[in-house]
Amino acid sequence: MALQFSEKAEQEFQELLTRYPTKQAAMLPALLLAQAEFGWVSVEVMDFIAGRLDLPPAKVLTTATFYSMYNKQPVGKCHIQVCTTLSCAFRGGYELLEKLEAKLGVRRGETTTDGNFTLSEVECLASCGTAPMFQVTDSKGEMEYFESLTTDAKLDAVLEKLNAKLKELPDPREMH
Image 1 (spheres, rainbow, N blue to C red):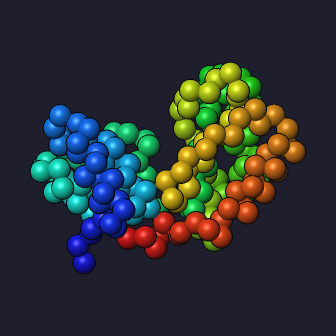
Image 2: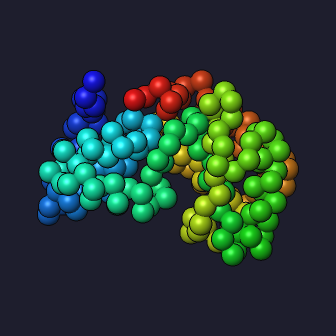
């Protein structure tokens, strides 16, 4: 079955096109919209966006695979992205990543067996002054920063908050 946007996403897509001088200029936000709509950016989604923007599929593929903000494989309902760049590394980024691996029972790059969490190590998230930190993008496309995670109590409170949110989130593995 061919992909298509929901009515709401289609409206957002049409509005996006009005903000850019060319369809190609709208590619990055269109891919983000598609990721929020379909859960991740598969080759099928890249082809869909290429068709909607009148671009060669290879142009969209090379762009989507260049940027780390696009998930090229299914992720959990909450995608936890831990910054380990210099400032975060010095202030406990790797220790935070190891704690999350232990608490979630997965290694970086993996998704929990229940599909709730994916854990990733990423480059700078531009929050150096509040390191160590991570960003969570949920399956509705909403993003939130959790900063100054210097104690187990702070980390546990964040995980508790995320666990409470899970029941209202769609499973991205079932969104295509």
